[in-house]
Structures are given as C-alpha cells and as structure tokens.
Image (cartoon, helix red, strand yellow):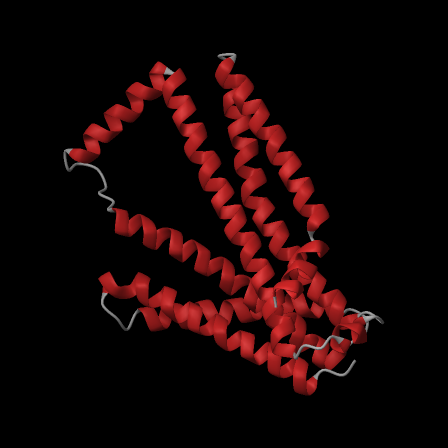
Length: 246
C-alpha cells in the first residue's frame, strides 16, 4: 500500500512544487512587509498567501481526481489493473494520497498562519492593541466564546468536508468510467454527476442533522460524513473490481 501511495504522490509532484513555490513567494512578500515595515506588502502578501494555500489544496484534490479519470479512461488504463493489487487497494491508495495532501496543506496553512500572526503581533503596535482589545471584549462575555473543543470540532468539520468532497469526486469519475469508459465528453458528464451527488449528499446530511439536538449536530454530521466517505470507497472499489471494463 505504501508503494502505491508513493506512486500516486509522484503523479502530483509538479503541481505540488508549483503551489509550494507560489506559497513561498507570497510568504517572502509578507516577511518583506513585516521586517521592512511596509503595511501594503503585509496586506498584499497575506491575501495572496491565503489564496495560495486555500486554492492550492483545492487544486491538489482536483489533480488527484483528474489522475483517476485519466487512469480509468486512457488506453494505458489496463496497466493499472496489472498490478498485483486488488481494486480496493488501488482505490484506497488514491484516496489516501489525496488525504495526505489535504492534511499536509492544512498543517502547512496552520503553521504559516500561526507564525505570521506572531510576527505581525510582535512588529505592529496597532495590531497588538486591536487584538488585546478584542481579547478583553471576548473575555468579558460580550463577544463570542470559543472553547478548545469547539475549535477542534471546527477543524475536524473542515477536514471532513474535504474528504467527502474528494470521495464524491472519485465516485463520479468511477461511475461514469464504468458506463462510458473512454467515450467522448465523459469528463463533462463526471463533473455534472459530481455536482448532483454533492447536492444530494448535502441535502441528506442537513435533513439528518435536523433530527438530532442542536448541540450534537456538528459531531453527528462529521460522523455521518465519514461513514458516507467509507461507503463511497467500497462502492468505488466494487465498481472497479466487478463492473469496469478496461
């Protein structure tokens, strides 16, 4: 499995390097603004950095789905099934590769955000005063109160949404390849099917969440989304193993 994951990661190494390069440039601009006391560079670099990290994770997820589409619809797709691995292992490696990239992107974004915040806090007195004022308002009970548990649950919900999004993308590509393997416009049909699946799953999640108490909804939604992602994995593996004609 580890070799399969490494093989899948090599397929997205170029877009990963490009995203890291763009992120590095944005961070350099931000640091130049910090240490050179140029507020415009700080704001511009920070905004550019935010977009680079957010869209970078999106692009990496898309690249993983696009790689699966190519594997299942190109003339060389039969080579994928010559590996001494079953379809569930192959699909699992592809999904784990996307999950690794999402975790890496989230970890990188979190680390950069924290370090940049600390630098800005240390170098700009006005920002420091503003943050201290906000902290006083929050601690006095007039502002929103966030516990560490709530922050962890928010991060878990964000990660779960990425996992579910990628899983549904894999399902759309696999289902279309099963019916229209290698035919014209099957990529467009897969995109349409993805949006339909996403809409249906989100409607179902919202309806199911409405059946439980409000304080339990977030945890319930996360658990249910993960169950759906696991079911999608087995459906994709079944389609590849039993229905896909290469």
